[in-house]
Amino acid sequence: MVLSKASSQSDVSVHSTFASRYVRASLPRFKMPENSIPKEAAYQIINDELMLDGNPRLNLASFVTTWMEPECDKLIMDAINKNYVDMDEYPVTTELQNRCVNMIAHLFNAPLGDGETAVGVGTVGSSEAIMLAGLAFKRKWQNKMKELGKPHDKPNIVTGANVQVCWEKFARYFEVELKEVKLRDGYYVMDPEKAVELVDENTICVAAILGSTLNGEFEDVKRLNDLLTEKNKQTGWDTPIHVDAASGGFIAPFLYPELEWDFRLPLVKSINVSGHKYGLVYAGIGWVIWRSKADLPEELIFHINYLGADQPTFTLNFSKGSSQVIAQYYQLIRLGYEGYRNVMENCQENAIVLKEGLEKTGKFNIVSKDAGVPLVAFSLKDNSRHNEFEISEMLRRFGWIVPAYTMPPDAQHVTVLRVVIREDFSRTLAERLVLDIEKVLQELDTLPSRVADKLVAANGTEDHVAIVKKTTREVQLEVCTAWKKLVADRKKTNGVC
Image (tube, rainbow, N blue to C red; front, top):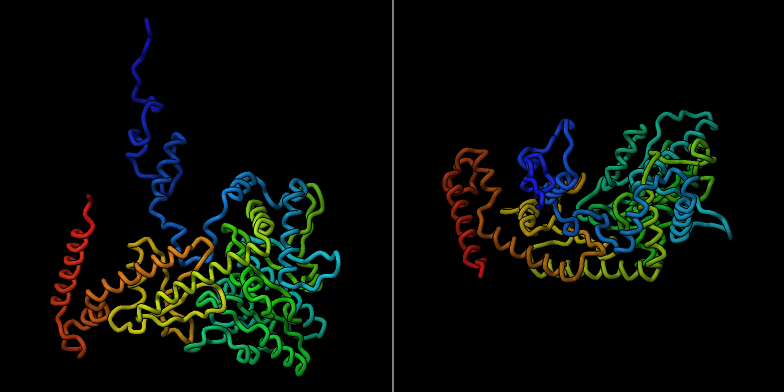
């Protein structure tokens, strides 16, 4: 006789996750649960909630890499459990980092002799890289001022108002005054002449941006170097330059090899670059390279031996994964100069396709430049009825994440939309985005102005604002009618066959 038994209520192995009790309760948000749950249920519940995130490939706000080859994905997963800081235990991983530092240093034209090793370090991103470079400048300046017997408690740094927030963090965290060159209408990067005017004896460095976050434009580092060299001669100072090449460091060497922005300029003492941007690696890797050992004060380097051997370290954190370092080395040897150039040329060409498509609508001014980071920043020619923030909001219905933002002082009256063109943004996607933007523009034309609606709401009736001819009630009815018509039209055209 065959023996059998009925499954008990507690025997969850025969149930699917969605038939179990684990989907009947809300997930813990503040306290760890008392009891365990099956691994399948934990995975399914978390995975389901993560579906509400945006699609990384359609996140056009980000410069960060969202696609890599499957072979590199496998290398990353194989090294996911390696702690990079254990250099004695993982000597090959350490060697790969050193190779990356040397390759990037040569890419940036560091003045290295035959067999000379470059000075640099891998970081978790350009933010940490900038903190380290800034600390090196601050310590060198302090040491110099102490030797001269002068006060060394009020350092400052000169940047443009277009710098990324990590520069503000550095200034605030490490007590350095941030002197910002204000922007102006039509000129959205740091003006070298105005920057040099702000330099004084307490300036630890001038930070130039190779690829502005706002519009992708390269700042004129060569002009800045020439002006600062002249001022240093006149004053006897030796104010250096740091280049924040987070976005442009892996672009300029391949698209604009003749452009002088790197260690070919004598005042450039350090450069940071994001491997996880156009270095084509997933988020979590940056690099900072110094011109020579003399530009990195020895007292900032720590030496530890409790992991098995003497290990020099200059980082803000300690433990970190090895995967991104390995992935960077993979990209450098897999693509080579030829491959990186091809990728950057494709990005540039797709940016031009998008720009031309937007220009054909007749509705936008292009704020970005053709030379620079491959992105398109654009603003409405007429935003009296609808603005860029509305376009950004409505594009999310199509899956696109396109940011809208205002420029920093003194150009804060300018609002722009920005599309970053990454390696995985194809020509087809560029053309599709233009079509979806055109649809959004058409829909906005059928809706009443939000600006007028806000004016009515603020003033109570239309009598207080000459340009508004309708009461609040009439505007609300018009909005409802427009949306009803929009929904009805969609139902007619989007039926299921």
